[in-house]
Amino acid sequence: MAYWLMKSEPDVYGIDDLKRDRRECWDGVRNYQVRNMMRDDMRKGDLAFFYHSNCPEPGIVGVMRIVREAYPDHTQFDPQSKYYDPKSDPDDPRWLMVDVAYKRKLKRTITLAELKAHPELGDLPLVRRGNRLSVMPVTDADWEFILGLE
DNA sequence: GCCAACGTTGGC
DNA sequence: GCCAACGTTGGC
Picture 1 (tube, rainbow, N blue to C red):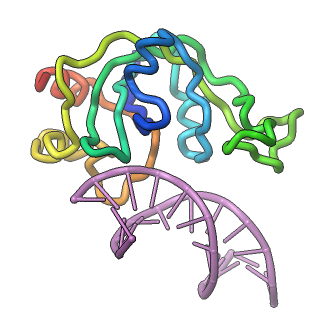
Picture 2 (picture 1 turned 60 degrees about the vertical axis):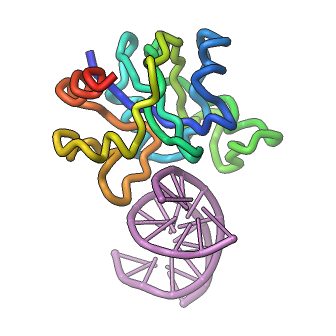
């Protein structure tokens, strides 16, 4: 089983929204590297950290489970959606999404600042300069280490 | 295929 | 709101 970290802006969709919905499709990924990881490496049963980005206190706020593997993201064909992609061919969809299910909230937010302060996490893409992936792999060791901070 | 211009992400 | 970093676009 693999581990992941997935970013979302809490103003758009936060951990409390997922807690309420229990399960949701992770739409709006429009980055090829992320799409390829979701398609090739993300499997049902994998666990992921829910990360709040672009907010007053960016950090890890919860844990969720991948419950459906990559399939076409319907928002790419919806002209009303901000994720609409007119260049995507319905017979060969360009963008994919997975479904996630709420597992739990962390007892507290493990902030980005805190993650950065631990040299043990130096290889975590999140804390590496210039990283902009909205979905990234987390090693077993980093997963355990981060949960240990809770 | 190069690369300048432009758009987006996301921390601060 | 600023801006660094990086991805994408499109002219050539």
